[in-house]
Image (tube, rainbow, N blue to C red; front, side):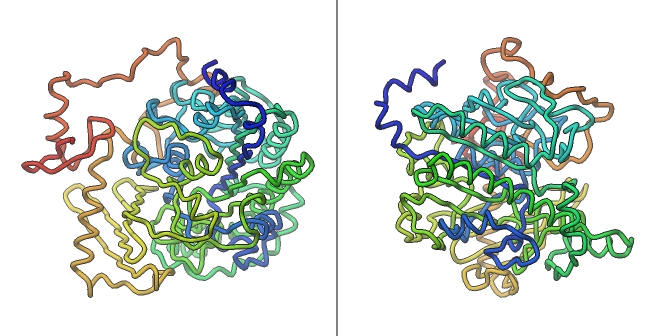
Length: 530
């Protein structure tokens, strides 16, 4: 009820004039797998249309994996602070994003917008405090998890995972098209006196890949002519696939991308039919670089690497923004943007007050995009992944000039570090490793990564592929989140007594934080919160 109390503070004409917002989020789309980046074998007319009618955000960055990007998108904050940087939220995890963090749809909701999410959540499911309907979405249709499949029964770990606002549903059809149909229905049946905020995170083209028969047949003879990604993890998986005489994932991947493009097209057509396209902000991007390893099928070349890695192919993604009323069609914005910038930027564009309890790590880039006058970032960007192997970290820090990539392989009594240093402005495809010639730059950037990582909560996500021994999934995930009435009013304080929290946090040092949103400073070998 709180959200609707704000509606009366806006006069109907002022509210009606605000732009609608539609965010499409692809899952593991490759940099080179869209027509406007030169792809000729996979048909993407809807995404090409967005690029032709909008602004390509040519240097848009995300984290290398799924949940962290979604957390950054929803909060405008660094996933390292949030405790969801290293690994995705697995079905057996109890993690989510702290309820004190205000999500982007909450701000739009408070400004009088009607809000909806249609698709994959992947930001917490163990308690209702993490549920989309508790994070600013009036309407939720979709899945709490990833990898639920493209056809019924839409399950994860054997438990059904398809719902509408907390009620299990049994809709039949191809998942990507079901999402398009629901998004279109929502637009048609909206309250026409109020603008809407619609978030459509697809599962496509995430594995396990599948598609309708006609799309499978369309790409059945597609040859896998991808060149090496120039990263060990990705290229080794492809080599192993060939040695084992396994089929390439490329044809099925192409079919899944085509299906996603068709789904985007259906929603764009609905905006056209409803006369909404002119004053609707449409943002499209991928949650990370393409899954270019053997089972993924994506292609990021000429960018290096892919999903899970912090080379450009893992973090620089396809992105387009269209708003015909404000943005010049067919243009390209060359400034650096990240998923953390989306919340402050869209709030600014729509004239919505950004509601946040903690400082944004992202920036408002609306004026720069609207005027197509790129600005240099005023601080470092950091990204990390510990996926899929626990103890195998992929890290990066960069600005407009230098970029350091670190691969850390941590053993029980050792840690091996490989550094790659690039002049990223001049070498965007990361061919020339300058680490040996610039040890001072490597040391400076390594220190920045070291300090940044110390802000991670000690109980944050880590790279895990299997659950704790004996863990069982529910039969239906809609029953899994603990209801609000069964939860205490405040977050749990943990085991240490209050007077011991600060000393214990200091003693943890670089191992992580016991105090939420702590900015550690070095003191006598420990990490003391400011």
